[in-house]
Length: 253
Image (cartoon, rainbow, N blue to C red; front, side, top):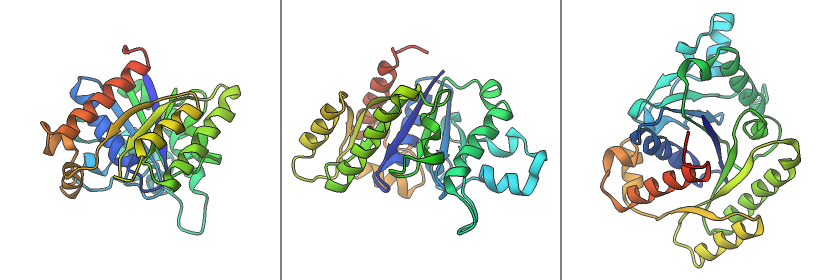
């Protein structure tokens, strides 16, 4: 089993990339689980026709000790197993604690033993790398962190902060930095900016996704690109990114 976490500035396309990576891996024949670690609980929506699924926190509040894996794990497109951590009632709790609760609940209920995923994807809220939002980086969870950025100044800044956090956590046995994913926005010199960012942290741009019509069209339909435009150029880029991520783990499960 390989486990990867996807971080990046809010709105940079982490969930879109996570869902499309899940679809790419599943189409290659791998068993995939995607865990959304965002209070908005929309990480896996593209695998469910644009609909949100019930969250671990909401279901925990309703069912208490009666909570089961069948309650919190839903099957999406291509058989991807989907989980949403969820968040607290606004103003009454810590969103990071929700991530901790969800991951601990999955472990306690034996999710990884029951579903035996080949690949686990953690999709993490924004550029927050503290408390519960650093949980997926910790030993026993993600093995590698992939950071999504565009060439925009604030995106590069946020990505650098995430990379720095990964570096600072390295001595604790946390996840290592797997690479930078460039989600192009069409700004000047963004390939150069992403390459310089990666070089600063001793890694590389592991894949690039062009700005295109197919991704927003698929999102509007609540689907992945694999379902809407499987023969498109951007699908080739997504497939290439998926393969390079697998290669970064040694190419074998």
